[in-house]
Each structure stands twice: as C-alpha cells, then as structure tokens.
Length: 299
Image (cartoon, helix red, strand yellow):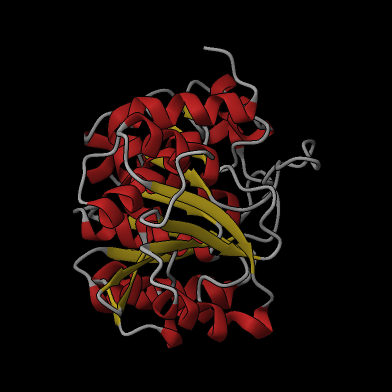
C-alpha cells in the first residue's frame, strides 16, 4: 500500500471474526481505480469493545466503517443518528462519520433491491414475496421491499414468535400487508400446512432464502419447504454466496424458477456504502471483478 500517506482517509469493517471479509478487496479496488487517497481495513472488534471501537471512529477521524456480525443490532445504541431503513430494521451495516456525527445506515436491503432489479427486473420488487427466515438479513430485505412498494410479504420461520414480530413491525410501519407462515419442517401432503404453503407459493412472484442453510461448509443442508409447489415465472434468491449454487437454488431451478445467489446483494450493499463515504458513484464493475476474484469465480 505505497499510496498511504498523512492524508489517507481510512474506512474499514467492524466484526468478530472479520478476517474472512471480502469487503477490503472490493473497496480497495474501487479506491485505486478512482485514484482516491483512501484505504479499507478489517478491524476485529470483540462485542465487549464495541462502544470503544465506535468512539474511535470519531476520535481517529475514520471516514466510516461497515459493521458485520455480531454487531449489526448492538451498534445502534452508540450512534448519533439512524437512517429510516436502519431505524425500521433495527440494524446497521454502515456508519458514516460527518464531522464527528456518526450516522448508521443499513445498505443490505437497498443492496438487495439493486441486485434484484439488475438480475431479475424491477417488476419483482413490487410483486408479492415470500421470505424464508426472520433474522437480521430477513429484516433488511423485508424492510427494503416494503419501503420500495411491495404490496405483500409472507414471513416463513421456524420460530413463530420471530416471524410474528417481524410481521408486526412491518405491518405497523409500512403500507405493506405482512403475514407469518407456519414453518416447522417439510409439510405433509394434504395437511393444513401444505395447503397454506400451496396458497402462498401459488401467488408470490419472489422467494428469498435468508437463513444460513446451505452455506459452506454445510453445503448439503436445504430449507425444508415443498419445492414441488415452486413454479415457472417465479424468481428465487438465496442470500448465501458460498457456494455459488446452493441446494435451495438447485431445487427451485428444477421446479422452473429463475435463481440467483447473494453475490449481487454483497456487491451492491458495498457500492452504496462506498457512495455514502465518498460522495462518488461507485465503480460497480471494478468492485464486481474484485469480488469474483476473491470468491474464485471466473468471468
């Protein structure tokens, strides 16, 4: 990093662990391409040190940082301001330092929206959606879909309480119709649960898999849903990006759906963070190539 000097502005990522992050490669490639005197580094931050790390952003004059697990929700209490998406989702993945004022944003959801529009078309942003899971990623996606005009979202989660909590949050804060779908495993043919799944999968145009099932190294795990009810004309997105093709994607593809993984969301959430920190349009193609190189994906 021979370009680093006394005027270099630092960006980075807080997480624990964080050494595996692909974000440094994306952002440093973008800084280099645009000849920006900036550098992006990972900061391993233990949960008990999060408050000190956030204050260091202000004290050391960092331009901003990304925030990843396990800090996305806990970090909100240490910030001065929250964007609407961050406030509604209750999670932050990007902090911007503006003259000592720290604002938390959630670019995950908008990154998903950009990726979906780029890959599948904007019509799938508006159509009814089924979200599998109710964790942090599900919240970000659900909030973004609701804020971008989706009329209906169905949340399927093994914990009925978490699904109901997310349904209540969105239903009370947006005009989107949100409901919870009981999910305790693969529903038996002819059961009430199977009929409920049939009704939901018969009307949604978008399926989003937000759990860790299928993620490396547990690549043989798949969400136990009735894949025989998935049909052509639907788009199925798995937020997992390692491996590039998951069991969920393969099952949906065999049922006739068009499938995508989470690489697009990873790319675009980073591009939005880049734009928040720099005020410049992100060189998305450069960031995409850097990400593909890190993931070992050939063009």
